[in-house]
Length: 209
Image 1: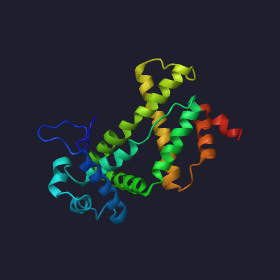
Image 2 (image 1 turned 30 degrees about the vertical axis):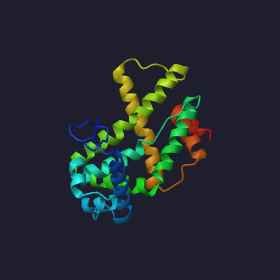
Image 3 (image 1 turned 45 degrees about the vertical axis):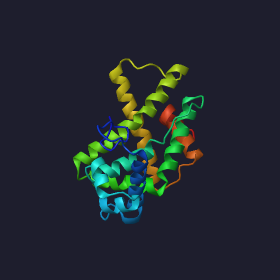
């Protein structure tokens, strides 16, 4: 599902300036780091990006939509290279995800929109559509590879498979976000290895560590 601020959304008339889009989203993240959510304004973002405020409003209805899209493009940087095994793929994406969250522009923007979404159901839905659901393709890709390698058994039906994908995403994203942004603990190779072992083998794996 494409968000209203997605540069790939087709619109009639003059083509979108992807360079302006990138500058606006970068300016949004910089403003969040410098000013915080409450002081961030569309006018400040426009000034930083070097565009007219009307340019922002032609692309985004308001601050909520703009900030979510500014965060979403950062998460679009995540990739799942084929490292030869499910365990290696999981460790790789966990380390990559943690490194992304450690960047000030990511952590500040994500924490701001999540906090604001507790009071705004529409914002919560936009986060779900533009960030959460959009990144589940990584789980789908990793699961498909694991099935092709014979590392995972096939699910009995599509509905069960969808529930499994949702659960895997929640476990990985929840653990990495909590450790990085809430506990402020490092996600290094040792932690990623232990986490992956626990995820793939169950609680019995943790008992042997």
